[in-house]
Length: 157
Image (cartoon, rainbow, N blue to C red; front, side, top):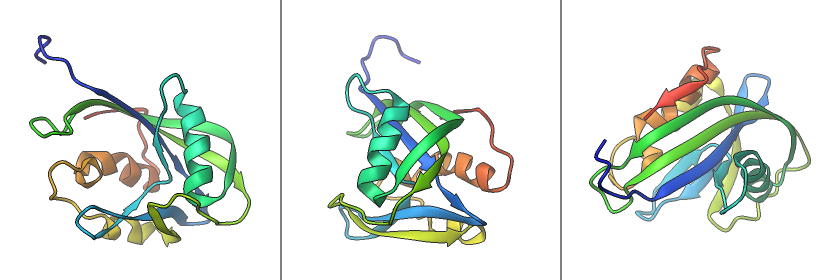
């Protein structure tokens, strides 16, 4: 790593909400008009813990209240090198107990969907635009491992 350059830091947290053999995903519209399926969660505010960010973001994106967060994995490293969104990323993944009704209030969320484990990876779109971390296969590797019962605690990006 070149220590002479300064990278913005991006901190985010996402939660694996499981119902039987289904994972809850949010549907968001990307800048190019396509639909992106992702885990509920998102960016942490300055001074906010990753766990607090997970609770806040899940509430806004799904309407659900989450408690009893349990750490699953951490992804970290340089992301989107050479693009306008280049950053050093720290992404936490949790599981949690949840209750409430699905009722997203985030204007970017166009839907919330329980997806059978075997269909999750088929919804992920890899590839362009290159400035989009959600389409980076390394971001989805922990989810694939989690669904397969093989989650690791740490994933370098």
